[in-house]
Image 1 (cartoon, rainbow, N blue to C red):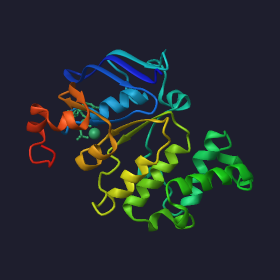
Image 2: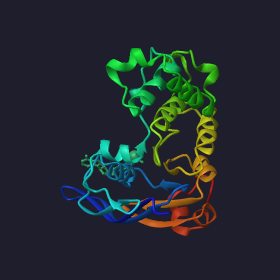
Image 3: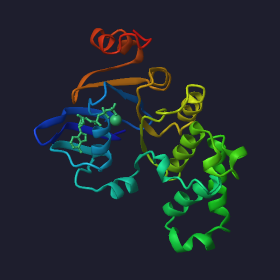
Length: 248
Ligand SMILES: Nc1ncnc2c1ncn2[C@@H]1O[C@H](COP(=O)(O)OP(=O)(O)OP(=O)(O)O)[C@@H](O)[C@H]1O
Ligand SMILES: [Mg+2]
């Protein structure tokens, strides 16, 4: 089983403790959400797990192996990925051309090889599969710049999936997406591979309650509680934090 196992994780920025003694498990196939007020330390936690930041203390294991000393690129190779930001997309290129890049990258054919590999049937088949998985096929030949914002975020998700991750961290996948388009994100998360471990960091409680089977609440750098959506919705302190959020 294994997957991601975090124990006693802490992070200080100077005198400011942003992560405090965090224990957290994300087994294969998990669908967890991490919620908490602004500044609670959610993105910091994601950055510690993906290797963007170094912890001040504690351990991070993946399938039993201590990955604390590995940099971000090495963790991506092991299968720990965070979504690309839209700024990673090439706006003037089509959805298909954008998706081809991470596929080539994963196969070690990036850069100079791009032109030659364009004719590679296996690469094209994989790109097509991604387009279909995310219902982007009708938009395949559209430049990313011409897509609705929610659709751009889907491309971003598809790009990350092209790396074939085993752990996927989504930091505010619905941020800035108009409410009329958030269903695109929710449905895309629903269609992710069943054995992929997913952690969604999100302020949109409708999305959280729809996709997560377990919710972790982070407050001021420490875990207040973890429970099922039903348990979290009934939790007094969480209700105080989210009073009026529609799930209290
Ligand atoms: N590089 C840094 N140097 C100093 N302080 C930082 C740094 N990065 C984050 N912080 C501080 O750490 C705290 C947690 O920030 P973080 O971005 O992890 O919160 P968050 O829970 O993701 O918030 P939000 O919901 O607004 O995204 C904040 O007080 C922030 O100002
Ligand atoms: Mg954040």
